[in-house]
Length: 123
Image 1 (cartoon, one colour):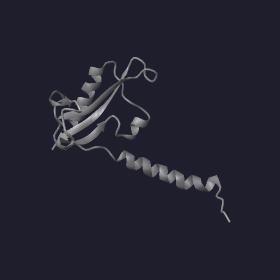
Image 2: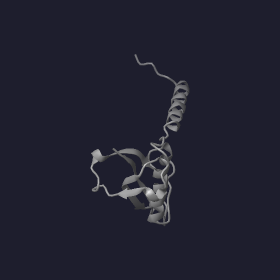
Image 3: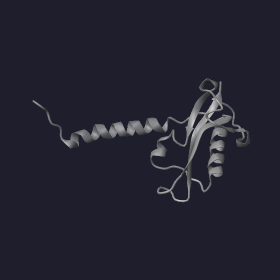
Image 4: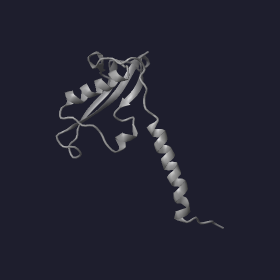
């Protein structure tokens, strides 16, 4: 015998679960690993320049938060996107970014560039 539940009875528990997940995701902000670093001191590394045992990823810039499911920053030029990532990495206290990717936003955000990368700290 199968017990059927009405959709109205499921709505309450589902709503509570959604609110709890939202609260937990909002609390999952990355904390700085050290004092802020000027963006001019943050270096961009090609993935072939470092081995994985030389660094640890502190944050996946622009894709670690729940906000990236709904909005994504875009820039008019690649250089502006990379500079913005250096600013974020510097505020986190990291001195490097790797796995940088900048994509043409054609079809989603025409005439814009979408960039992301990994803020890293060295071991």
